[in-house]
Length: 212
Length: 212
DNA sequence: TTAGAAATCGGACTACGGTCCGTTTGAGCT
DNA sequence: AGCTCAAACGGACCGTAGTCCGATTTCTAA
Image (tube, rainbow over all chains, first blue to last red; front, side, top):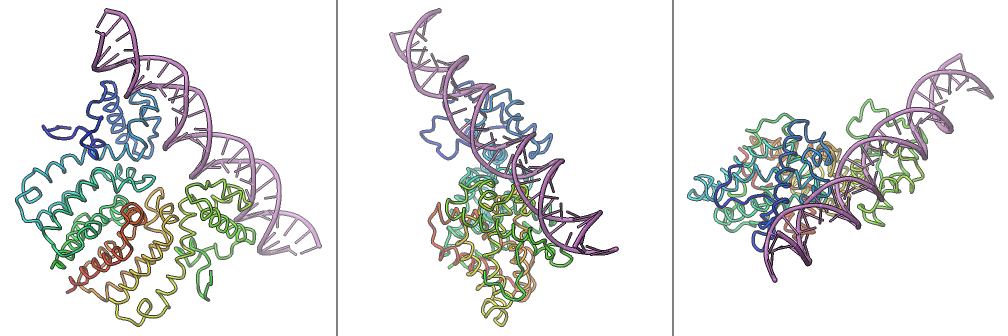
């Protein structure tokens, strides 16, 4: 929503920031992209995401189905794009925000702060995320938010826990953030967020304890 | 395949073992269930699971589409049922097999042995599992194999790591077994199984170290 | 052995995700 | 301004997942 000076304009532009023609988007294309995103957000929140078809979104946005698919690829990507908008603030705070999440605090503290924030955000966006991660291949693991989380974790883990397999530890911390797991724990098992967050802290501490 | 005395006959019967009418299945129903499973296994391995439609399975099995859906609910459940057959041997060994996986060994050792076996099995069945876990809700987390893994982990963790949040630790160990994560790590990142297994052992050790 | 009830069978049908391609439009160049 | 062409548009179209219900088969009890 409120986009600062250097904030990326949209999520699907993140992977290939350089040499990306999406930045010089044609006026009608940009207008339609905004329309679709707005229409999707409106319909999803009105009826619940499962009761909105892609035709509904196209009609509400006043664009053709072809346009919808040209810009967003498929249903899951559309949902992930919506999540990406909500995620932008977290990205910003991770990179340039205040400690303990932003730079300045010790790596271990930044890692714990990241867990808090990312779990809160994902809890807030559960429905959209579940739809977004129901992707065809493993598109989810390469989506811009995941890629950003992964990079962030790798850098901080390398600093906080030298000597462990950082890449694998990263995946071990990413896996419990899966949308369908959160959905299951929250909506089917009624487990409070505090317990989920505490467990994530626990996993992190367990990994940090193995450093050196 | 080789089913011992008390082995359940099919996966979808596990959740409600008692008071379940599925055990006194009509003769034709049983025959058709077997036919469908066999047809699915054949077609999936022949063409790859993504190039087999439900109509294909029904036709190969010599059964109507209605029958197929009556017995298996949806595409994902069919895939999970196939995985359930492969999983049966692991279940058996977990409960009645030799140590260190089976009873007799210390809980911590049994946990490590479980990680080895379950990851090897899931690597073997990746395609089927990916299709099976692409379920509509979070059906995957309540599928018979997951339920069995969960129970097993809870009991052993309670013994090996008293004082920690056993339920949450269980989920932390279950999350990295997700089929799409394994698929991503193996097929997109080319990470060898040994590293994935080692990471799982590492997560487990980290949790065990927090006991008391 | 037979009749009747209950459960199963199977294919026609619906709705939706995703593709294709002829048409339109925006933007730079003369 | 007018021209040109790459890029975007949009709706007709296709394949498949999943539903429904009349016809058929199995089991039980008399």
